[in-house]
Length: 61
Image (cartoon, rainbow, N blue to C red):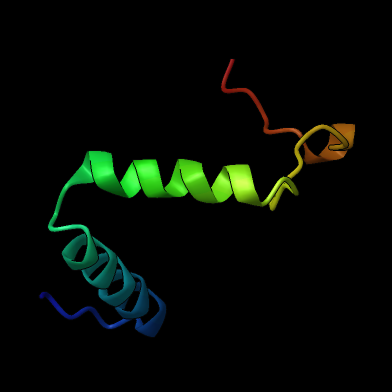
């Protein structure tokens, strides 16, 4: 595993590797697990509906 100079990136890579190994590097199995967890936990971690106008991304027009 490649090591970066950023401890957060390193941590994300470590977690990703652990998750991939747990599911034998099967992306479909990883997403099936995520979908199952979403069914069990009905609350949302991120809610974008209440964003204020100032929080909207600026268009590149």
